[in-house]
Length: 358
Image (cartoon, rainbow, N blue to C red; front, side, top):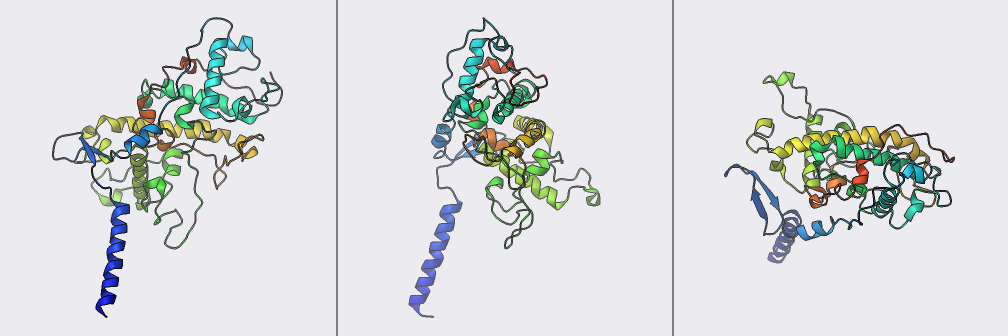
């Protein structure tokens, strides 16, 4: 081989190595904050160049002035008010305006209502919205172990979109090249661009399989956690790390990842969060499937877009739905403080929805 050919080959190899290096590694500076004793690799690592973009994407709309709590109740002023019955008329109008801004700023009231008959239930999104208000109330009242006193509103997930942008659905089994039937061996954004199974959510955030890959016994033959469960577990951990913008030691002690007694407090918060997400998906999202099956592309008036996944299941939530790259959604903005109306949601059974106001 001539010297010229060797030079060309060397240049091509150097170019490929350069591309791989640039696209794989982050250039300095990288900031590290210590979260444990020195020498134990207990720290969070962040890229300061990504912080401005994340903060800009997690701004909260300015809250309107608090409404008068006196006067007639909402169910006295309007027909067919079911979940916000006991707030004042002024509070009801305020939260309706806020929900429009949070969920459907371009569509307005018509996204959930027949504007010619606001009491009617004929637009299915109104029925969904009622159930989502009950879900929000439950998160704020019964899942404080995860959301604390910060709380959530519709905006925490929706961010001005009729359907939250960070959602998931069960993936169909497919095989392409080296890809396994479970979406394995192919980089997937859902698991931090790793080649782990791309859907760890169905077993852990819809089902209640144990998230564990280390045996609880010293005898390997009795380890009930198989390879598939282990890979799902690592896939979910990669998803959580990416969704929160943190590394493993935000929740785990590097000396012993499985040891609860040595884990940072964030691990307990995450434990409750996983169970909260399961509750959301199983108690609120899945039961609404018939409405989405009947309206798979959204309301007749739009905006049109899929409400079901490739397997016909509803679009569900995971860690990224709220967190979107920050370990505290919306950078820890106190969402519930400005909207006390969300504390007064009626949790009783809803009347069946049809086109006739009641």
